[in-house]
Structure formats: C-alpha cells, structure tokens
Image 1 (cartoon, one colour):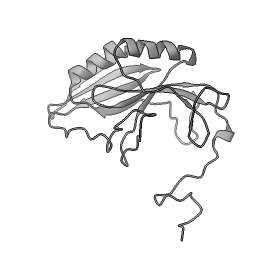
Image 2 (cartoon, rainbow, N blue to C red):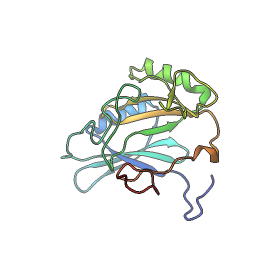
Image 3 (spheres, one colour):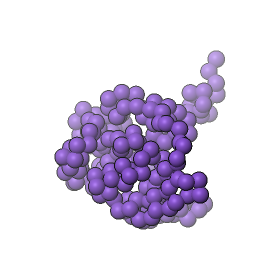
Length: 188
C-alpha cells in the first residue's frame, strides 16, 4: 500500500457509526453482509462499541449509546437511495460507507442482497457526464455502484472500480462555502 508523503497512512483503521439496536446491527453485518464480529467493548456510560472486520485489516465499528438522539434522515443521513432522489446531508455528517468489491462479482452480490431481502437502489454507472451517471456502461464509467440502507438507515454502497484513475481525473477547483470555485473570489 502506498503511504502518503506526510504521514504513513495505511488505509482505514475503522469508521465508527452509531446504531439504535446493537443486536439488530450484529445480525445485519454478520448474517446479511457476512462480516466477522472481532471486538466487543462495554463502555463506562453503559454503552457498547463493537468492531466488524471489513477485510484488509479494516473495521466498521458501531457505538450503542443508551440515550442517543433519534436518527435524522435528510439531515445527518441520507433520506433516500442514490438514483431515487436528493442525497444531500448536513455538514460534518457521514453520507455513506462504500465497500470496495470486485467488478466481476457485482451482479452476483446484487443478487445475494436481493435474495436476503435487502432493497437496493438502481445500479449506477458513474461517469463524468453532466448528470454524473450514465444510462448504460461505457468506457468513461469509472465506478459501478449499488446502494442500500442498513437497519438504522446508514447508507451503504458496494462499489467496483471499472478503470484505474489517472491525473486527468483531478480537474476541478474545490468550491468555497459560498459556492464559488476556489481562486475565483465572491461573485458580485
């Protein structure tokens, strides 16, 4: 794995989310997605913190807090599946978790989710067109995705890269908080 120049980052250690029902979360991530539960922790506040193996020595972790606020779809999490409506979420929210899958297993994995009763959104062929998604696969598609929710409304994605990304794939100036491309200043 290639390290960054500043820090020797080796990928994702874990991503920590919050669930409403740890038993339901364990059932979904172990029995539906097939992840192994690797670590369980009782917290001093009466909560729990559980770690699931995503592969590649990377983990998806969940907190369960006894008095956590209820979920807020459309604010802290997506209210709809991509391809079915607006997926915007609030600043500092976590929009979705994407699991990298092999491209040649994409259709098989979609069928497995369907067989387990998991509702998936439309298969999205992400490209650089103005819409950002192609009707059908073509050589400009860089990733193929399917999205679904976990039992707590966490938006999950199975993503398969379809080509290697190159320097040409970085060609946009980042937007400022005012919605202006960086370096262009505020509009009059």
